[in-house]
Image (cartoon, rainbow, N blue to C red; front, side, top):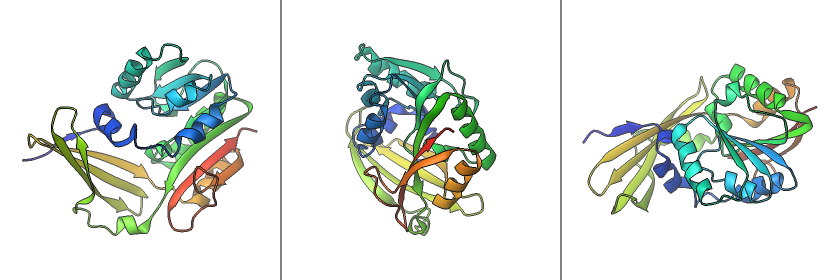
Amino acid sequence: MRPHTRDFYDAPELYDLEYFDSMIEDRAWYADLARGHDRVLELACGTGRLTLPMARTGAAIAAVDRAPAMLAALQRRLVDTPSLQVEVYQQDFLTLDVPGTFPLAVLPFNALQHVHRTEDVVRLLERVAAHLEPGGRFAFDVVIPDPRFWARDPNGVHEVRWYDDPRGGRMKTWENGFYDPIRQINTVRYHYRRSDRSYEVIEIAMRMFYPQELMGLVGMAGWAIEGAWGDFDRGPLKGRSGKLVMVLRRP
């Protein structure tokens, strides 16, 4: 059976299966950053995995995403949490335009890697700076390139997982993909096969950034680097692979 292909961000039920409850390593980090602020700007908010913990600190969250399906899932969650202060905006963050300014902006969970062109990264940094108060901070994280990942068979079956399917039965998922070293784009394909034999593939293309490349880029864009770490415990950067977690400050 030929697979049906979807955009991951049109499939919030699959996105949440993969990440909403299981991806927890960054939750406390972003909530701690939000704590004590009256307003926080969250870009690429998705279905609210981090929006809700940040809002529970008492901050009012301006939650921005370009995907209507993801925002609809977030809004359904907000119905059950009416005490939280969350305003939802459907926008592309390259043309970001929300009311007011903020002491803190965040772009979590590798979302910067959806920006493939260097000139668009610069544009994003400009749009974020325009929405920050003087001295405001911008926090984000990315995955550091791992050459071992690119050596895998692009058509192989890797990272096999099983989930309870919301439609009933069990669902098998695995991934594969390929890397373009010229454009620094890593394309990952997520495969989902349900117990009724239906088969979907979701493809995501992510720009890979090397630490020195990204640090140089934000510096040339006029930002001060407040901190750069290899994990959400503020550990050192790792030489081979892992995370780059950064906090920038608007001059």
